[in-house]
Image 1 (cartoon, rainbow, N blue to C red):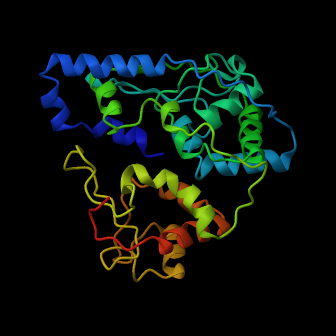
Image 2: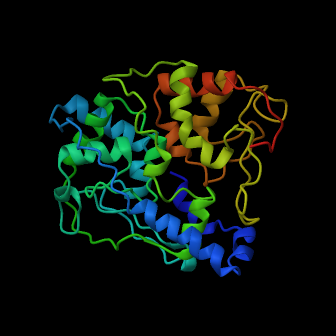
Length: 303
């Protein structure tokens, strides 16, 4: 969801300084290249698209909420061009349809499922940039739902440029400032169930909250994103600390998601994927709220 925006505006002064040491730059760039060239040897999954309207509807729901597909690839799944951002590179969102320029026919159903689960392309090598690490926990039935939805999309004729990762982008990835090499960030041995019904529990919320870590930090306590420019909004503390959500009731939570207005009356910055959060169902909203309330309280800025 947010990573495309973050990539366009985020750079690290420390890394830029380090770039003056050519050896450091070459070592990190070489490590990135070797990592994304690794064949993970993971077979396509035995998961196949279906035409059941209920399954397709579930896939659409995931795509427009915590899956983040529509936010990047567009409401028509026809892709969006990237911007040339110099040493960071260029990261477009591919056309996922069967239209001219689309990638749908380059992947079997099993390869699409493997991409969602393991973050590897049809070649068996790592995706770049697409945050599959946030949704690699999806159970089999949800993976099937997403690929069924993608297969149901009308063809869109749109050719999108290939992803290009520049020198600075490679170094930022190796320093874990921006996750561009996706497959190395996924636990490929993590058990995934056949089905995992959405329930308003902290356990389910922990899975949904994986998509929050990039902005709010591993500890969800917010604070400035390292290396981000001053114009980037500062992520809030999501823990139940007095500097965070200690006084947030579940009614407040749902009102904020519905209106996009904070308790202070200030609109939530558009950097936050509020439309995707608003589209979550009651179980998903409840799960995310339950998870955030169960977090250890941490002061703002400990990320």
